[in-house]
Length: 303
Image (tube, rainbow, N blue to C red):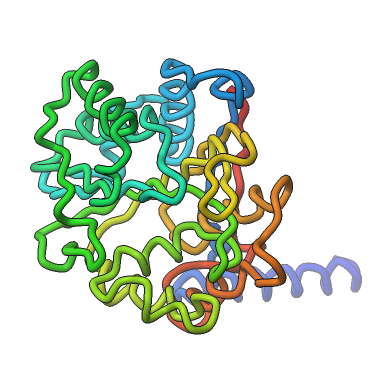
């Protein structure tokens, strides 16, 4: 064996020994797994002069939930996030920018496919003032053979009653709009609204403490987020831009960061308020999720 070959052999043997030692001791670091957020967009689902197409919403919902779960089977996908023993709360977006009713119906339909122990659509008590919206939700549930009794307006009030219930699973469907306190509202802001103290204690500094409630009040619950981004709003004035997307995730901070990213491509924050502020603090201060964009895998689908 030549001197050069001998040196290469020695180096190779040493490297193999280090690899074996690392495998035996567990010292080799596995590649860091990113949290996944799925964006599903359908150009035909809704527009300013065109009502929502319920079939398109279903197609979007099925594409998003299966890609998030990593399976082609829709029922299996929902069962990835919802177990037979779960008591599920589906929290709607509240009244500043109401959900597209068909979104709530399709989410509840997906929840029922998973066959949990119990499920409630915990709509905001103020929604009762929007009779057309409530009628469309109830009508959609009826068409989907889901009993109206799943609707409960007594839990998501100001102050909310989630902490007094035996829920083990939370599915949230927030909308996004410019907001005079938060810059842009979304998932983290919505948690403050749903907290037992209500949103007011978090208003003082651009919602910087909104993320403080996620782990203490909701951390015992499995969580799934389906952001209703079919249209975005501007403060209290209703739809301003038709984004035509649904955004899926299981990490509240990561999903909210990507939803904000989508919002800012076409819409503006309120004034000079930094909308990422309370979202980043939910990660760095309150350890409620991931705000680092490099640790988020985004899957962008068109249907």
